[in-house]
Figure 1 (spheres, rainbow, N blue to C red):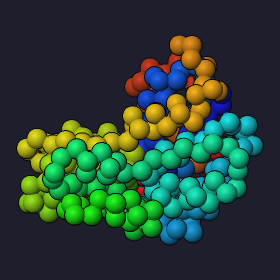
Figure 2 (cartoon, helix red, strand yellow):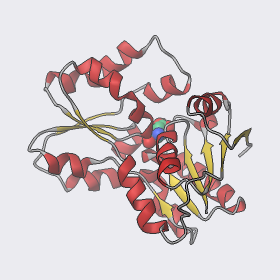
Figure 3 (tube, rainbow, N blue to C red):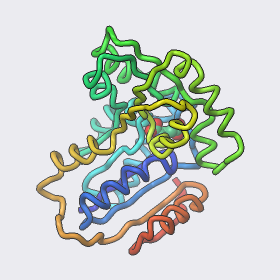
Amino acid sequence: MRIGFFDSGIGGLALLEAALKAFPNNHYLYLADNAFAPYGDKTEEEIKQRCLAIQNYFECQDVEAIVVACNTATAIAIDEMRTKTALPIIGVEPAIKPAALSEQTDVAVLATKATLLSERYKKLKAKYDGKGVYESPCAGWVSALEENQRENWPNLLKSALAEIKENKVSHIVLGCTHYIGLKDRIQDYFGYALTFYEPTSGVMQRMKQILSESLEDSTQVLDVHLMATSSVDRLEEWAVRKSLKKHSVSVIDL
Ligand code: DGL
């Protein structure tokens, strides 16, 4: 199968990595729309416009399924994307449900501003009324990750998480794919034991349910094409770090 993944940048690579392990024998395209990152600070119209442009691009590349590896894009645009194509589209949402069901305790949702303000997120949250749900848009985190800034993290963590820590919340929903790789930093900042909820296994289950008949199941990754709308540096670093074999990298104009 040819499967297209996209995110505003490097966040969705966590989902691509899981898919490469779970369903190796496929062709993967990954598009980091980093010329327009962060999505979380954009208007709904801007986010929809980018998602529809990417969907159109993937269709021209003959993909057979799209994974929206971005909570923000899913929250704002997935319904409209689905009205425009017959392709299966799999999205990602903050894992509030497992967090709320697992313990009788407050949870904190870390997600972008656009996700937290979206109707889709508000509906999801309303199902778990009665629990304390703290929220933080984690301002500046996505840009710091995209630009590989290292020195700002103590301030970024404090300004995003101080209130959650004061309230001794220990169940943390990682509601932005960029934050999946930040567990250690977040854990260090809190200093007490945390339970994280992240969407990777749920997305893999969904891929299996929806694509099972078409997903190839031998053990060889066919190839991975990594693309960005601006710099490909972070994608290249990732490919090297993960010892990705059959891959190519390119900048696209979209
Ligand atoms: N990684 C994205 C998400 O899951 C988008 C972050 C952003 O661009 O603001 O929400």
